[in-house]
Image (cartoon, rainbow, N blue to C red):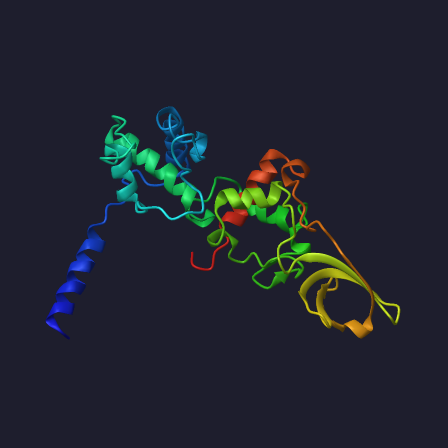
Length: 256
C-alpha cells in the first residue's frame, strides 16, 4: 500500500479515536436538565425547547448544521462562535455538556435517545388497546395497510414519532391514500391506493391483498382526503399509556 495512504489511514483512525464524547452520557435525566438550562440561557435568541427564535435557528430542524458531533456542539455552547452573533454564555463545562445532550436529542432519531416508559406495557398497548397492529407490521406480524414499523425508532426523530400519533396531516402520505372501488361485477373493495395510472390502479385492500384493477373493470373510484391513521392517541390513551407506547416504538430498530 502507498505510504501516503497508510499515514492518512493512521492519522484518520487516531482522530476518530480521539473524538470527545459527552462524559455525562445521554440519559433522560441529563437531556432534561440540559433542556432546562437551554431554556434559561439560550432562548434570548433561539426558541423555547430548541424551536426557531427571533434571531437564531431551530436546533432540531430538518436542515444541515455546521456543527454536528458532540464535541463540536459542546465547544459552540461553551465558547460561542467568534465573529458571529453566537456569544459565549459563561457556562461551566458541565452545563455545556448538559445542553449538548439536549441539542443532540433534538437531532437524533428516537432510538438514539429513547424516552422513559414501560416498554413491555407499550408493546401490549400496540397490539391491544391501541389497535396499531391492525394496520402496521413489526417483524412480520401485523397488518399491511400502514407503514412497516420494524425499524421506526431508527428512522424517525422522537418529536416526529409523537407528532405522527397526535397531529393530523393535511394530506395522506403517498401510497397510503384511502380509497373505495366498486367494480362492474358488483364487488366493493376498500383500502389504500398504492399506485394509480391512467388505465389501472393497485389497491391494497382491508383484506391485506393487493388488487390490480384496470379501468375497464372499475365502475367507480372514491378517494379519501384524510389519512386512515388515527391522530388522537394522546386522548384515547391515558398519559402513562401514551408514554409507554412511545417508549416501545422508539426502541424499534434493526441495528440495535
